[in-house]
Image (cartoon, rainbow over all chains, first blue to last red; front, side, top):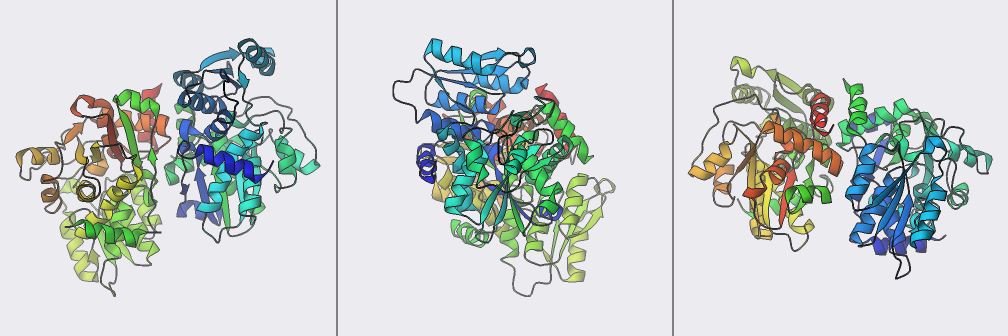
Amino acid sequence: MTVEQIHAAAERLNGHARITPILTSPFLDDLAGRRVHVKAEPLQRAGSFKFRGAWSALTALPKGTRGVLAYSSGNHAQGVAMAAERLDMPAVIVMPLDAPALKIANTRALGAEVVLYDRARGENREEIGAALARERGLALVRPYDDPEVIAGQGTVGLELARQLPGDVSGDVLVCCGGGGLSAGIALALEAERPALRVRTVEPEGFDDMARSLSSGRIERNAAVGGSVCDAILTPAPGDLTFPILKDRAGPGLSVSDDEAMHAVALAFLRLKLVCEPGGAVALAAALFRRDLIEGDAVTVIASGGNVDPRTFSRALERLA
Amino acid sequence: MTVEQIHAAAERLNGHARITPILTSPFLDDLAGRRVHVKAEPLQRAGSFKFRGAWSALTALPKGTRGVLAYSSGNHAQGVAMAAERLDMPAVIVMPLDAPALKIANTRALGAEVVLYDRARGENREEIGAALARERGLALVRPYDDPEVIAGQGTVGLELARQLPGDVSGDVLVCCGGGGLSAGIALALEAERPALRVRTVEPEGFDDMARSLSSGRIERNAAVGGSVCDAILTPAPGDLTFPILKDRAGPGLSVSDDEAMHAVALAFLRLKLVCEPGGAVALAAALFRRDLIEGDAVTVIASGGNVDPRTFSRALERLA
């Protein structure tokens, strides 16, 4: 992949995706021990960066495509559903039964047909999705291992290159599941602002990308669930995303669920921004892994805000 | 006052205040029965639009001013404190004992000296403030009845005129305490986008501006407290703000505390934006007073997000 694909996606997204703001707070700077710039993707349409990749992929489909199919625990589903609705294209979303109720309800309310599967009983979303796509003639939109999806997520990197103050260099911390967002941003920054370097952030126990970056080959997670960071629990780095990150990303970081929840509370208090736990792991790393970060500034991608109200209230209890 | 003062304030704010985004959601459009555009001032520095007026006022002071004094239940305090800190100017803030603990703590953390008074015991903040300002040679920065403050708040209107899609006209709903934000926006829109009209929104029982607009002269509130919308509980319209609004604003609206809390919950769910109850009354009016609004679009100013975590969690219970 090349940065030209990201520029082409940016053109298609222009006027459709939101250019999200960079937020700052002197209180967060103090906690992090350096200047913190937070790119606020919860303010993106459908509440996460996923709308970018979805719009990019859907607008790159051949004319005459009858509809799209996606499988996702939530944010990709909502991104694809909203993009499809705005493009007047039918969408079928395959979601796990145990996905947050809010994400399932939102996906339906955006006009998509939701097909539920039971991951605890070993049902395989790839197989269910492939069969449905074949039967109905739908185009599959993968959550991260698709060049047009990666190109769409990379538009976050193009915006960062323009928006950040000129003297900001160093680490860009990115919440990482399959690596689509991280890979897209890494490609964009390499071309547009090489003084910035992507570092992936994952939940402890789901640090497949960090271990893969360290060993140089794709490593898998033992666990399949059990973290509050539902948005970024993927089994292993993608076949497309890992080779991109292998040569471009710094060492991966990981944080505990408790630290992610604490970051959710601090984003509420100091930025007035709603983050979900999986969308706050990068902020958590900036605040609670400061010894593993270098330089006088750190950039953080807050990647999504689709959080159940109860989980959010539980996070806020930390502020009492 | 003229729009030139607002343009001058905008120049001084350039690079210091944030240009806040306009947020939208198809879910809110459905509830409101028309397109809703929300100007997200909780994302402004110090968590509310008040930073604009504070920066405008402080940068208009004569050279050699030894420091500033403000009295405020919270958002103006934080706005003045943050502006003063960034301008390296001493600040003294007179706050009521019963202001939200978070707002008092934040004001102190921003380097201001906080002087508390007891409004229940009839202590008068104007007297306390005037005495302190005299003793120490500080410049008083009024929360709304000051031309430079109104000019700073008016920059919200200049941004609206640029940011809103060209086909948006009709009502601009503004959370209203003393009327500084409403007056500034009304002046800006009259000059830059006259198809938009300001309408003030207040908590029920504190609708002094609505009654004043209706009678044509300044009316006062009977109550002095007891609403969850602490940010916008003022005794009466300002002597500067009312004459501006009298000729330019449409009929005022009011909403219940319960409706304000519901709007807080919906801003969380649909916009991923943290609003305080007083900062959400305009959104509440868009959603729950739809019969009193005309046209196919409505613009809402979400004015602030400095809310205690417990109050916020209480608002979210509505989503269960």
